[in-house]
Amino acid sequence: MGLIDGVLGFLFGSGRNVIRETAEVFRPNAEAEAVRSLAQNGAALDQFAAEFAVPRKGLFDRMIDGLNRLPRPALAIGTLGLFVSAMVDPIWFAERMQGIALVPEPLWWLMGAIVSFYFGARHQAKGQEFQRSIAATMGQTKVVTENLRTLKALEGGQDVVDQPMDGTGNTSDNPALRDWRHGHG
Image 1: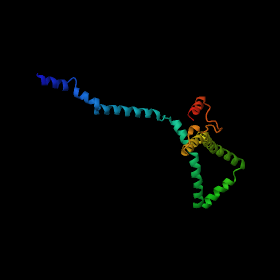
Image 2: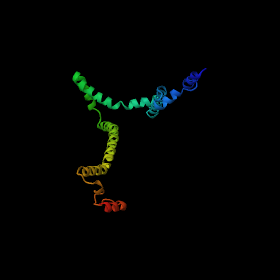
Image 3: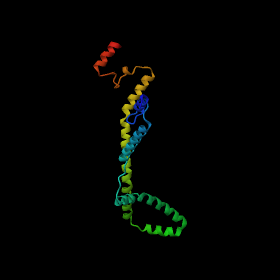
Image 4: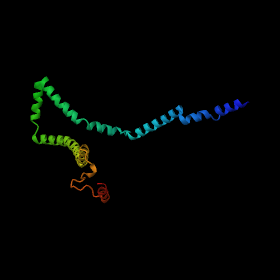
């Protein structure tokens, strides 16, 4: 074994590769980078899976959810079905309507109350959700007004610091800022 074998063994030896280690200072190892990227992507997917996991419901819960979704479409389709049946067989339809004419008025009131409560509860929940969103939007009015005032002042070339912040003419309640303005004004 000569000097060349010793130097080559040191540079490309079985235990340590000096050239590879030096090159990795300037350029990452592509294979190691791919392994790190795979691990990072896997961790991100695991996190998303944990955040957006849909809890599995039992058979009973799924059946009740399905039943709760039936009344609105059933009423809509049933009403359309009445129109179709009136056109297809007017005599049959007229016989059924004569039967409905015999339903006592208190039963109609009860039916109206049931339908009103069923659809009214959904309407009220959606209405309250809408009211909360309107209130949140209206709560931003002061911030938007201040932003518009600042933008108008900037557009006109005025110094925003000298503009009143509270609409009363007082530019600031900060004594240090007042002293600075008097010294640099």
